[in-house]
Length: 344
Ligand code: NAD
Ligand code: WQD
Image (cartoon, rainbow, N blue to C red; front, side, top):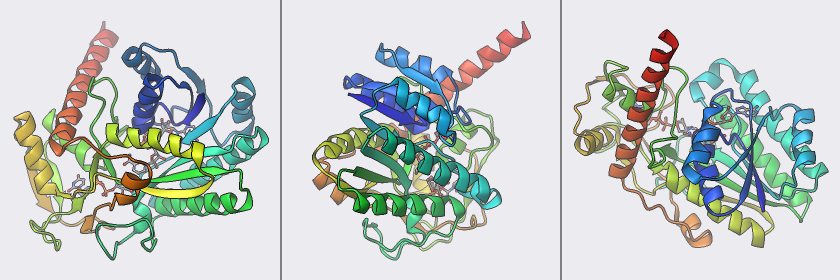
């Protein structure tokens, strides 16, 4: 069976491709490399010892996508391609609506033309906005306000309507909470192009000396230590959720939504503490004001994914901190070797 993974050279997509290849699937990646690098293809092949088909294409370009669907017999799609920064989306809403919504519409249109009926879509906990109840269940009220979240919500609504219009379709929407960690080999992980927005990439860059200190955004939230609580999930566990969702697609039609998180909440101070202890590193940090739009606590109720998909996260917060740090070290080493070679 051949799976098309859009955004497959990205942070989460590359982990999924590794798992798919290791499970014996054939994989085609479509990525425009706007937030990833072609080297990832070699890394995926190195980890798995298997070949992968990579097509440099943009999902907003119908002609390019059609070439992919004509060249390969695609059986299922895992759709991760898109842009993902809440802050960036506030400044560039047009890009977000175009890349995320238009890109998905074009992909769905091409899938329809080539009779591909099964898709997994990457959504986000950001659709819940300010949660009324934590842990958050899938049926909680959705009230995101930022353009990024609104694009995810619009796509979710479109997918729901599509499933109602055609009973042959099988759609799974996965709402990711806070993915961190990296592949245990240290070969693939999250590589922010500029100053990281997210907590863990910022922490690892402070640990490596690339940044002087971490800013902790607020310590007077209504949480036990005053800092924000989030549901961090190891990217390897997240990836396994997609494998389970693929199996689910085979036996079900319609559109089903699942939270993917660890089901446990950790505060910013707890993450700093865990990272320091696990990696034997002191992190410099300073508490500053709250970041606009942040909520006090966001933790998933994962019972639906556990029961229906028969999936369960396995990695501890210590493993997440260890794998994130290993990846950062290997990636910094690779960068300095590249710079040295360029100088020669
Ligand atoms: P990422 O940026 O690492 O990966 C996305 C990939 O899509 C990149 O390789 C990028 O080059 C590619 N891409 C972007 N626009 C494209 C286009 N028009 N055509 C083809 N390729 C394109 O991001 P990620 O963290 O791996 O996230 C993957 C998906 O998961 C995204 O849809 C994101 O919104 C969603 N998500 C991520 C998080 C997170 O915290 N990382 C949380 C919730 C949901
Ligand atoms: C986690 C905690 C911050 C950075 C975002 C998106 C969400 C999803 C995941 C895509 C919060 C605190 C952070 C820093 C800090 N992505 N923090 N100093 O905001 O929960 O979710 O990424 O879909 O949509 O909104 O994740 O990692 O940015 O923050 O103190 O430098 O760390 O305030 O409490 P967030 P995060």
